[in-house]
Length: 309
Image 1 (cartoon, rainbow, N blue to C red):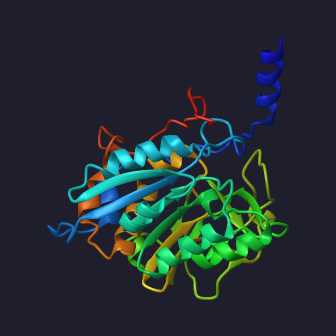
Image 2 (cartoon, rainbow, N blue to C red):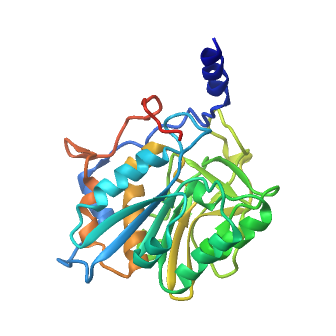
């Protein structure tokens, strides 16, 4: 009986936001190739060590904040790239992992990030380490910690001020930046984002959007329900010798099977590392190509076996 009550209460505590959202329609191969553009036969110039930072999600139903599932997906893709070796860390890197990693990709909820650890991360970036920060990786509480984390990532959660909610509108992007090269001026993404964050003055906003009503949503919002101002969704940030790419999107697991989002992440990695994108391009297609279409129609909301601890 106690086990049943625990499961019942635990189930009610889990959050399932924006259930109306579905994956974007798969792209025709020729459309995706236009976004990618012409490629030269270039390989990585050096050996690259990628460290993936992950945690366990305790608050969302399957299909969102699937940190372990996304980690396994992305490392499975990256390890196929010549000259790339992979590693993973739970919650925070060891000193040796900091020393060895060329780039740290993070997708997790930080449970306990001390000032000392934030300083370690900042020192890593200033010394020439690079970071890809996804979705909840920019959240830390209280507000004072968020302000310190923003000095590492460019933006971070401002407890008491920041908000979360669905992406209701198209994202205006800066397609003069190499990460968005060949993209149209607007990007439609079926996901969530955060706004009113701590923000460093020298971030480069390369994707911005109007916000709608915060928190859970049951349906799309109309244009007259959106804010007048735009908020960052994608940004880059340079600190010392290091480069950071961050996005507050990446809530839905199916987003990581969206070829446009994959292309953005892989280009961001190449931009951070100052390496050619060519070796990463096969990963845009891998596992999601069928009958000339690239992407998924699976909302991935009911898979079993999500790791909580």
